[in-house]
Length: 197
Image (cartoon, rainbow, N blue to C red; front, side, top):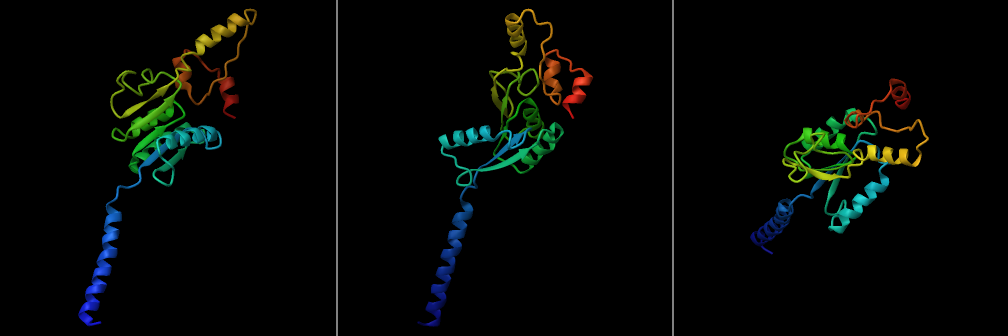
């Protein structure tokens, strides 16, 4: 083989390899979902499993064609803004703000461009997460079960079933006082101190 033919052959091989790198580099990056939650992975294990099932129904499998960035506050609501901001800085494709209104608000405040999908039990309009239910507006949308708004009805039902009861206890999360205040509830300082120990 002549030197010139050898150089052409090596050049062709190298350009072929380089060409394959260029083709790979031009392929779209794997989409990234930011998963934001106020709780811990252990407490949300069954819900995360359901999240995976839902993704797989649409053909998405973590590690194969979608990546998930998890941010867990482990019960510390004060961490949510920083965790949401971190996901926004990483330019994830969407933020799944699970775990209620606090996660949704943190994600909304962190970005006005990354789509945010929330799951909440309270009225997202009342807390300023969305403009209204029919047309949420902006980059935030989601699902609510209005569970907090149903608390007075549940208490009424308990009272109807046990009319002789003079005291009814209500267990609330003292770290989510916005929801408690919206319901017109006050948490006595003695209970609040015990609940946060």
